[in-house]
Image 1 (cartoon, protein in one colour):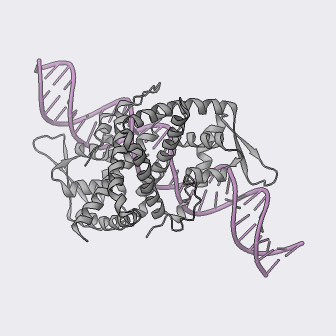
Image 2 (image 1 turned 30 degrees about the vertical axis):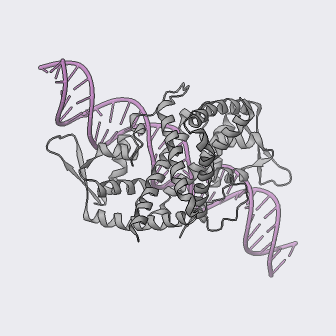
Image 3 (image 1 turned 90 degrees about the vertical axis):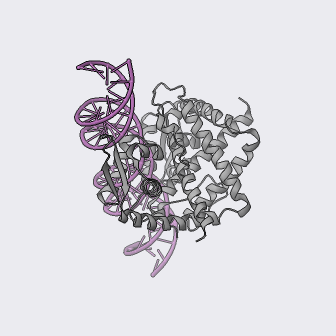
Length: 170
Length: 170
DNA sequence: AAATAATGGTTGTATATTACAACCATGTCC
DNA sequence: GGACATGGTTGTAATATACAACCATTATTT
């Protein structure tokens, strides 16, 4: 193992550490509002922008286990921001629909996020912006590829398919 | 709010979502070994490379509350990978020292991480590498800066503490 | 058609991460 | 000497998360 390589790995370690901290911050309540967490915002967004989603679709949007989806969505159901519906053609599936109240909340939370996003974007030099997006994607994809043995995912890169069982690397 | 701006924010939202997932994956046990978590690895690293650290120094390395440091370090103490020592000149402070067993574990965990890091680096085109590091830093710094400024419009005033603004560990 | 497997979802249980507040001991400063 | 600051631990609680067991339903195989 070359010395340069060790240095490289060390750099990567700290970068990941900071990434974890940044991720933690972005999920803070302070970023959002209306008592909606980051994950719940993602759920509202998915339901607001796409029709006919069911629980199983959210697993991949959120990249979590199905039991976790159940638990994340519960508060939204209780607050009546989201409704569940049984589909006739498959009695197992639970379809989800955002309610008018949910849409209103979604809009307001989106405003909060807009402020946050604006602040961040304001701190990135204009001519670095495209590079930031591009390379961040490279980095994320590298990690995702590492995470899944079979990276047979759709080109909608948002739909990170990573059930824990596929997480075993190396 | 311009349409382009909305699109921009949306892009950022998903980028952050994916970043959170990536961060989550990087902290998975599978990346490490020897029953050492990511945070604990950072602690071992700090103690292995710097002399005379005390608890308070770790707060900023880990960017967590002091009570969290106490809890993160406890398993390391119990497994005797780390020792605590009282300093004579300040009986409040607890100094920490990595033990020989701790060093050995550190080395082995480092090997695990090296493999992980190698896999990731192998997925990033050679001539993008510098750009990735550079822009990732820009992005992380932007978020960090936002975290110290953005006490946002919050009605629930759970702002970030000073520890957060010391995010910088490199 | 009966048996078996797969899918969708919930609940029980457990763990990790993390914060905040209250508290104690010790230092520092006026 | 008293007020305040610093370092650390413990109590308590919330969130995120997984895995396994389970139930109901649908799909596939024999």
